Amino acid sequence: MSDNRIDMLGIGKSFFETRALDDVDFTCRSGEVHALVGLNGAGKSTLMKVLGGVIQRDQGTIELNGRNIEIPQPASASEIGISMIHQEYSLIDELTVTGNIFLGRELQRGRTPVLNKSMMKRLVRDELERFGIALNPDLPVRELNSGEKQIVEIIRALMSKSWLIVMDEPTSALSEGDKERLFEFIRRMKKEGISIVYISHHMPEIFGLADRVTVMRDGKIVLSDATADTSEATVIHAMTGRELEQFEKPHKNVSDDVLLSVRNLEKPGAFERINFELMRGEIVVMTGLRGCGAPEIVKCIYGLDSDYTGTIAFDGREILPGHEPAGAVADGMGLVTENRDKNGILPILSVRDNIALPFLGKSARFGLIDTAKVDRLVDAAIRQTSTKAASPDQEIRFLSGGNKQKICFSRWLDDDLELLILLEPTRGIDVHAKADIYRIIESLAERGVGILILSYEIDEVVILADRVLTLYQGRQIGQYRYPHFDKERMLGDMAGTHPAKEMA
Image 1 (tube, rainbow, N blue to C red):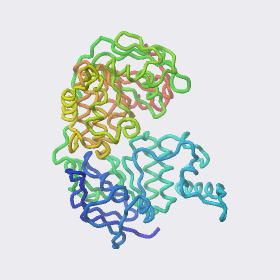
Image 2: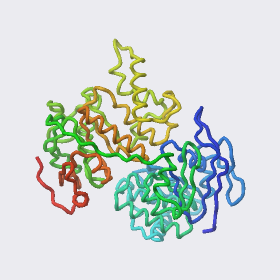
Image 3: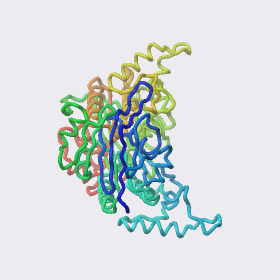
Image 4: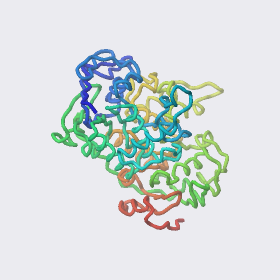
């Protein structure tokens, strides 16, 4: 693969009154892993969307190997060898690995409309073997785990002749094992002369993989250096302009008042014999590898799935199969999903409208919405979560991923909340925003709100939990109470190396 270099020079971009990019210079070369970091809203994704032709810059130039170019649309970026892999996969579950990789550029037999399936399959297999990846090209994508889907996305980019691949938080949906496989894949791509722009908040990943790190803050580049010549502390300070304020779990006494009781909950093929209680003011964290069954358990509790046996009792009253999310909200439950863009927000609505959704019924009298009350709730939610938006009227789709997540979280911060269910609450969130979210979770628990969390990050699990439930393939394996957490034992539970225990 030939040597290439992309230079973005003096790039500027504004959204209404917000200056998203301010005179940004960014360079990437073949065979380089270049980490791009910054707090949520710093401008990282906006800069890469300009590079990918998703949005157009207001000022500045882009050069490829010293020649001025324009990238008016994503197809133009693909033509010059630039691909973007977003946090949320763009694969079609019903198609095979081969079908997804060649989607939109299928090979035909001569000049006939007949697809040359055998040729496409052979080319995909050759590319997989080139990088030492064991994956069946005939498998439907729906049967793949998150790590395998990530690989399919990358192979699709490579087979479109990309020399530069932008990866936005590529490990946010991966297990520890899948992360290691991805890192090895990236190292192999680097040896082939392929360049990676690696957007991440995880410092160990950045310093373990990247040759260079560029830090953005408030739409500007504030640091760009070889990773060998800087440090995690320096990068974090550049991201924030201040030292990282670590979160420390406060000591508290958990109530004996049972808020949620789950007994003998079963759903064939998803989970079996799930038993636990959650007290008022308690933070219970479920953890395991992806596929452990925790999201499916939550759906039953919240009314998104009624196909289960067993009993769920909330605030002393049994919840019958068939109850719906609207009833759960009315009862005082809130839910933050793991996929904010697909089912956490309404992208064409404003920040205000997205936050206000659960409050509208509560704020109405005689069919009329009390807009003053809604505005107070929205303003308080934005303030409590430090959400960065031009105004409450800004469309939520223009916000960074982290600020979208804060809004998904903040919409539940009202006085009627009794149980908050959080699925991967800090996925794609920067280090300072994580600490902010942790403090909000603790403050809710201190006022008596029960918190049920699903997290796959073991360090987050032990930071947040009053009690941990470990799951493996739909079965409860272990239970741990603060402060008696054994990370090694928990990881063994998650990997299925320990037998399941009977738990009351």
